[in-house]
Length: 330
Image 1 (cartoon, helix red, strand yellow):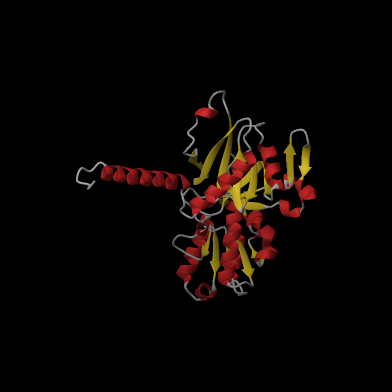
Image 2: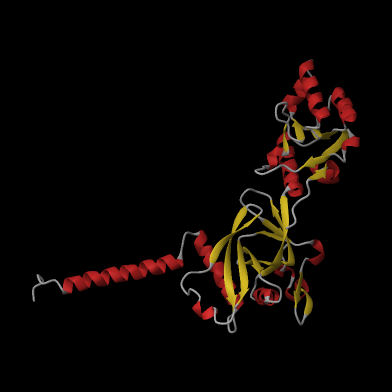
């Protein structure tokens, strides 16, 4: 499992997108290679970007109009404390928002301590949102998974299983039925939030599907651009499993083989489907997706079926007791 690096430089994380983020570097250019180190779990993106704080500073600090006024005051204690944090390496980057001019002593301190000092024309609230989003994209936990990732009925489904079991063939069948391909073989997975995983396809293989006997297919050329999607949250995993001789007929025919698979600390429902002669896997996966959607609305078909049978048994028992009651008039 490949995880994110231990840190990323200011240059890669923010300076490379300075125009989009509305950033202009005013001082501290010698700090562009400074690393923002990854934080241990549990983490939130506000741990990387926050408004200026002298108590528990984040690596990226935003100076809003209120803090700008304080920094321009004659409070020497505040200036000394901020300089201590910059010298200690607790702060890697400071952004002055709302098109305000950074104070001269802040620019000088940035050059001396290799802390990047930026100015932005964006409002502090919009700047905060954009910097947090950028931090989430660059510092999110990530890994690579093997399988075919698709959007089936607007549900992100990862089709997994051993090599050669037929994942690509099933995917081709599903694409022909209207599903959309996201990634084949190598899926980049990012954890942008505490609740969801998002799957992306590496640029070099985007839109391609390898099918044994046919080679590499350009899905967009064959089925149109709407058959390909860039990314999608991972909602369900369908694991294709080979059928050892004599196993399939003896599987539990009532209860689906569903478990929770943990990826980057987040649980994703996984259903295992046995691959056996005569089974239409595309239809089965589509039915699994439909069932997953039912579960999201609180519907459990197995429980409903069992409850229905139990009610029938109870009614039958009550009627049988009534027929056998000696007090019943003839």
